[in-house]
Image 1 (spheres, rainbow, N blue to C red):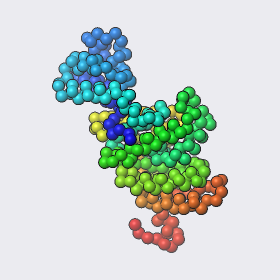
Image 2 (spheres, one colour):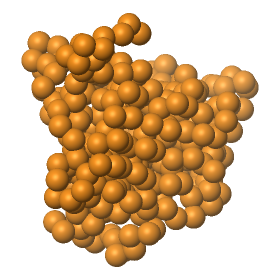
Image 3 (tube, helix red, strand yellow):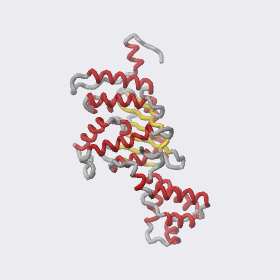
Image 4 (cartoon, helix red, strand yellow):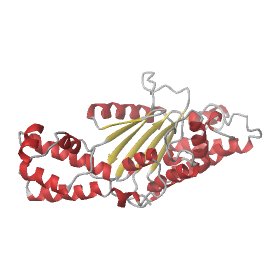
Length: 325
């Protein structure tokens, strides 16, 4: 089961943010710090402050001495330093994990809240093994995994997704997870009907978890003032309020991470627009149940799985069976 504690990567970012804050509060430049401590490389401090290197406890002690950190803060940051260096122990929780999947797992670990939007795919945290295999095979056709030593091991990548998914059911500290799925993610182009049916059934089950909220966005529903989200993205808020919130923008062949507040706030606004435009959680569950029935009745694999999404209450109105919720 994925750990409830943050990953070493997240710990490094937190440590770097705190060290930079202490340096600035002490009125010191990077060059002054390097000169006073006697480090040979100016890049050493930069890598520490940007969370790009595994921190040495003695280096952190030297910096805390120079900055005059009080005892309570020293103890806290040295504890974070130890967590930031324990990559091997943390990775034991993920025996089957490709580098890309590990990147997402590192963000998800220690999260209190995850918000995701995807215009074309079911996110990895929700995928069935069958849906995941279709996605992996289709990506490989265009060389998405070129250079990845695990690219030819489909089952390793499937198991990576399943390992990540355990955080949704890990108990009382499971994160709050909200996702907006475009209808296209479950449309006929996404996979064979039997694969889609299995995926929709799993979404129905996940939608009933107390910490999971699913929204389906019908294909013709306007968002805000005709806003069009350009790409998939995820927002991560962590259990430790001092760990910086993080945005992950998912591209076709690369992912971009940011903790910049203005950028994060813009995506938060967009996510609110998406949730408002999408079907409610209860109507989404009704839509998923109806979609399961349509997929069950699909006879030929080439048949489109189901038509445009319409809120269940609208369907009942046309059939003369309108009921209040």
